[in-house]
Image (cartoon, rainbow, N blue to C red; front, side, top):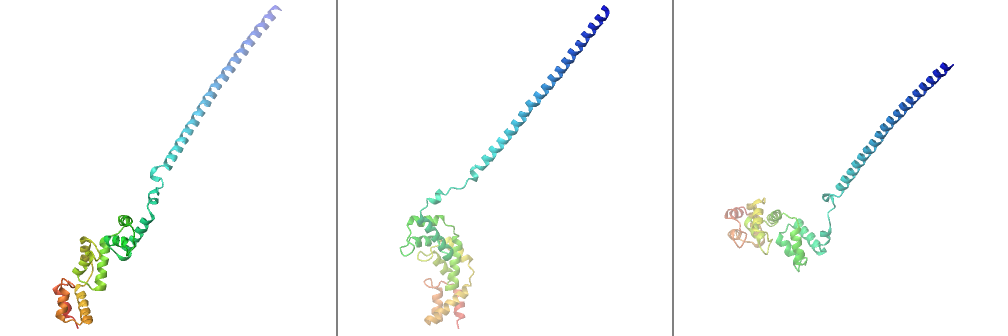
Amino acid sequence: MAKEVKEKKKGGCLKWVLIVIAVIVIFGALAGGGDDDDKSSSSAPTETTEAVKDTDASEKETTAAETTPAETEPTTSEEASVPREYTSALKKAESYSNTMHMSKAGIYDQLTSEYGEQFSEEAAQYAIDNMEADWKANALEKAKDYSDTMHMSKAGIYDQLISESGEQFTEEEAKYAVDNVEADWKANALEKAKDYQDSMDMSPAAIRDQLTSDYGEKFTEEEAEYAVSNLE
């Protein structure tokens, strides 16, 4: 009887030992899983933070690009400060250049003349300084007009282009014009000869002298001879 009691006590102790071991193993497993969860939890915010940083950087770049000085609208304060008289003078100057092919000096005089536009000298100078014009091309157009409508000589056109009482182009502009104008100077001389014959009943000799005179038409001797020889 005593032996059975001892065996029961021994078996009971062994049972409790196994239970304690099992509890320790379970707690250990739970503790290990908790560490893994903590590690996962701690890594997640890091990725989120990096994403936020990238977004902030992108927004900063976009803002900087939108405010780049090169893309800023140009200011109109300078244009707004120009007096209306000045801009009106500029428009008039451009009109004289584009439609009448006038010279730089000729336009200035027309803008300031009391018999012309009557702008102030300051407004006229602003117009001349700010207009876009090809003065050589204007001189060439004037040379064509004098050749086609008035049948003038090469030398006569040159003098008219540079004259202070004429077109007031520079010598360089006038030289470009007479060198590049398409004109038949002999034919021009003949037309002039016909005019003198029909309107003034001049003799061939007098017509020749008038065509070649420095105070007259300024054609060459060859051109004048061609003209007189071909009169009817």
